[in-house]
Length: 453
Image 1: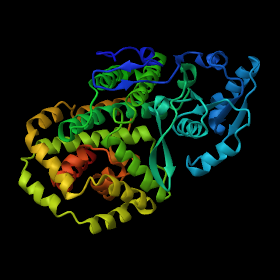
Image 2 (image 1 turned 180 degrees about the vertical axis):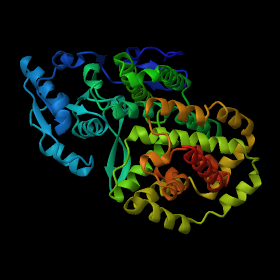
Image 3 (image 1 turned 180 degrees about the horizontal axis):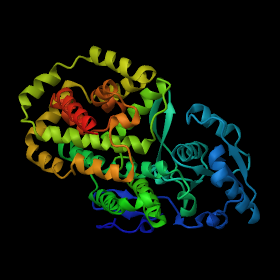
Image 4 (image 1 turned 120 degrees about the vertical axis):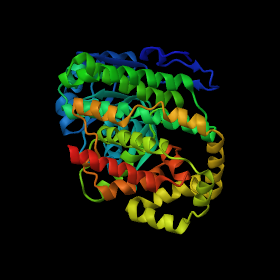
């Protein structure tokens, strides 16, 4: 593994032995991000030995690129079949539609779209033991190169094992025509790496969690570049859009390199998954994933700033976690998660992250390493800096801007950490017995910002 970040192509289809003790591998064979890149689809299809592609899109992405893909393949002598999805809940029904319409001679699946479609194709191709390609019609999230997919299962957003796509095409002539909101959402997903990298560091310090500095540095370098070019996004600069797409692919590749989403997903993503879960149950349209992640990143930075102002009483924290009331906790999970509660409760049954013994172990570790923890937290940029940057490019940065009211926000702070077993700063603050108090501090700060706006 490289001891300093390299270009994306250097990581593709190459086994890398790493000083972290793991071997890393991204099975992506090619990435084309350039004007007119869609025209390379037939060449790659034949080069990789496929003859019967199955194109999956929805009505919108069919018009944007799906029809063009089929035409280009036909002109090159490659006959494909196209499915225009009618089920777009990206759940069990969508998976059923994809499988029921699968051609018998299919040898490669091609997802044409953005996050949800490409996640479904990577998941369904994994289940069907077929390879897959991705043709992006926008750049709103970093899942293009990932080895996992997000799917609605029993009313809860779940991370599922999926195929990594063999080919990613990001035609900037197409990407620049995508709604500006979609591009901004892609940027929002990328800036979430600020706080997810912090969570990984906390997991390393407090839990002794495995950590790969080389992959972390790769993501941080990608993030630094995207932050640098951010002001050009609002001008729809093709090079800037290509950089965002490249950053999203590289971020997704970090997931494949590591084998799970630890390098690219933390507390800010837990907030997003919680919001999507509860808003869908309420019959409400939720904001785009990347918009939610951007807002979540701001909120996590605010929570960190509140934490750094506190004098920590570790004995008080121990008394707090010893009083954990499993029955009351389960009642609150059923209240807040609704029909998804059983899935969340099962996560806790397996992980036991809230049990007094596990909390006490982490508190002992925190007390021993508190200076190092504070030094790590102080490396985070200020919430104000990030809000100003998001405002400049027209990305939401306040919960009210994406339909999150004060009551939902309070529940988010208290319970979104239950959506995954992964350790984040939310668990840190919970273990210290401060999640209720510090989340109120964040809300007061938000109220002052709203009053000035």
